[in-house]
Image (cartoon, rainbow, N blue to C red):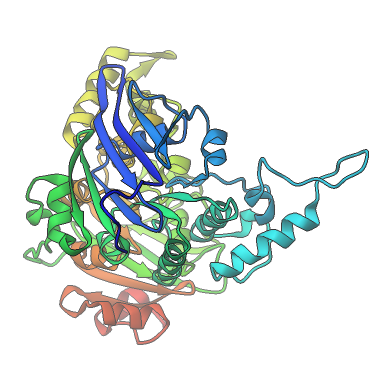
Amino acid sequence: MSLTPDATPILAMRGISKRFAGVQALRDVDVEVHSGEVVALLGENGAGKSTLMKVLGGIHQPDTGEILRDGKAVTIRSVSDSIRLGISFIHQELNVLDNLDIAGNVFLGREPVQGGFLRLMDRERMVRETQPYLDQLGLRFPATLPLERLSLAQRQMVEIAKALSLKARVLIMDEPTSSLTLTETARLLAVVQELRSQGVGVVYISHRLDEVRQIADRVVGLRDGRNAGGLTREEITHERMVKLMVGRDLAPAMIPDVRDEPERPDLLTLRKLRTLRYPEKEVSFSVRKGEILGMSGLVGSGRSELAMAIFGVEPPLSGAIQMGAETLKIRSPKDAINKHIYLIPEDRRRSGLIVDMTIRENIALPALENFSAFGLVRRGEETTITTQAVKQLGVKTPSVDFLAKNLSGGNQQKVVIAKWLALSPKVVIFDEPTRGIDVGAKAEIYTLIRELAKQGVGVLVISSDMEEVLLLSDRVAVMHEGQITGILDRADCSEEAIMHLAVGGGDVSSSDHAVLGEK
């Protein structure tokens, strides 16, 4: 889209600064978007993107600066002010209620009512008006379906449907595709293009640089709470975007680490495991000592459910889990933890952290008995250990007593990892380890995963990011509808080979027949 130089932005943030408890989160930041334009906002976690959007949403008030709508200064003190001004948000962390159906979530807080004395909620209208937005996004289920029956990716699409229903003139999309499949992502990007053609201004926040290159008219970079420059449509390349965000070389972490592969013994072995999601299917494979085993598959293939079974959240219906020669009885997460098997879950805010607790409390929680006696916690020792963990993982925080909910996504993920590292892990399961994390934090987590493997830890990496799987894995196991369809050695791995197995094609590699048993 071409814009005249003097075109008035539909939304502009000028000179925005914000400080929290000794931390300067934003310094004189400028961002603007025009009607019918997609502006990508890029930056590492902690760069200030989320704080800037919270200022726009009325959650935080800026210390200095102003917000302009169609060239006129406005004051935003609440989300309702944003909605009134035609600004709608799709947040990275889901903001939905599982106990309501889809229509109830889309109309939450603005439910239509029928006339008459009782003023009853108009359920029929809610369902009728919700369905077209589901159809627009290609969601083939009724608006009356309870949200608890949807996958994480499908819930994300419901959030998008809710934003579309508000008919906003400015749409803020914060990592909207972080939980979506390639097909769902393509559908969403098509919706963004349609909205752009209708004159909607879109601020698109994403760490998926291929998406940004595909969809953005301009790129604005943030680094350490400041403007880091910008790129026009013609200037957008992967290398320039990384430099804009990070300002440093990430090459060592972002290339495959081809290691010498001595004969590694099996560390964790699953034999004919049956899960709640796919009770009729059996899963068998092993994770070797010092190995990074990638696990790929389409959404709904049963990968996360398998991780939950190994960790004891949803104990397996039958089958065996072995650590070396020992057969384990894992009926709860405590059983897994006692055997030094740890899970970094897909949804870190919901399952990996207690966000209203401090960093110190979150890291210390699994090892609390190590810091306590007779019901009393030795705070000094706890603080020392957790401070060391924070430094080791490079968590950006003013203090270990900072609340976890106030950290960026990448730093929250580091805290989830830190709480297990102090407990001498033998096996660590990473479920979508870099979902919603910027390229800089992603490189740091890749380095950490590789370091764990070098120390002899067995690492299982479940990821929907094909590039990530190929980058990290010594071998790749592929799942389809609850069962392993193949295990590929590094030399045999390619996107084509993985996708062939992910849709149910192919046979199990001959080298793995001894582990997988009968096919």
